[in-house]
Image (cartoon, rainbow, N blue to C red):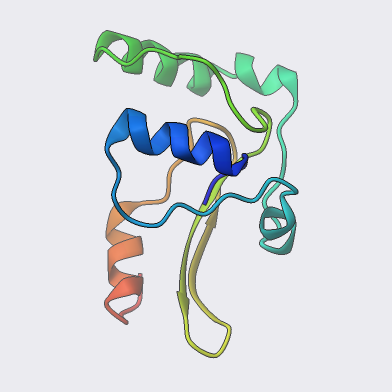
Length: 112
């Protein structure tokens, strides 16, 4: 799920070749329901953020045009039927990511 418009989702599909569903939440209602916060401008200057940005650039990744809400932080959730949240990680900053082993363990039904 991403913050944006259906038109932006179509552009993402063309750019990446993604074939599966793309869900956009222009009003950020799902983000609010999941208690995902927005960051402020100063978060861009945190030491970890700068280190991660430099690492990504060294690995060949480049920031391109920003679409949607650039201040909205994301998260990773594993959901199950019956409104059950098996795992939730709310990003503390743009460089933050959920530990993949915990996400996969939750998706398999085990404890992270």
